[in-house]
Length: 100
Image 1 (tube, one colour):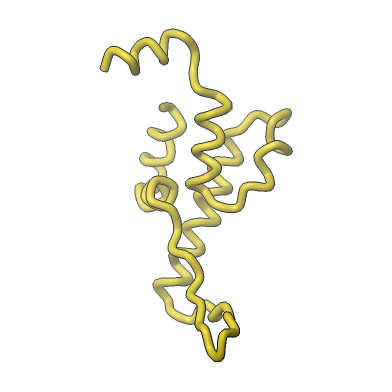
Image 2 (image 1 turned 90 degrees about the vertical axis):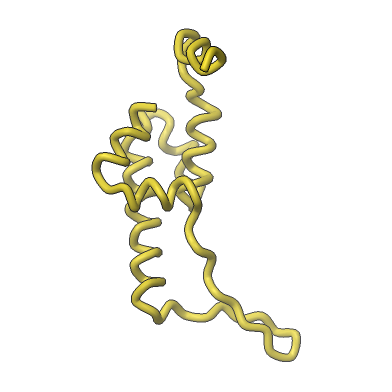
């Protein structure tokens, strides 16, 4: 919960990327061959930059001894889900969540 509030305070657009996920790269299929289209639009570049920033911000919040376990996760949304699963909170936090 603290990391969620921290990221929302820093940059709410980051939190939206984490919560909703980044837009996937565009692909084109020509004669049954799929190719990934390069990022060319300013909006796509901004979205990718936010995704990298969001993932980096989440990684900074993970204790050093656990960073290697989470380093292979590419997307901020999946990283947050893995962190929440691993560090689900203490008994008091879980009890509060059940009551709400």
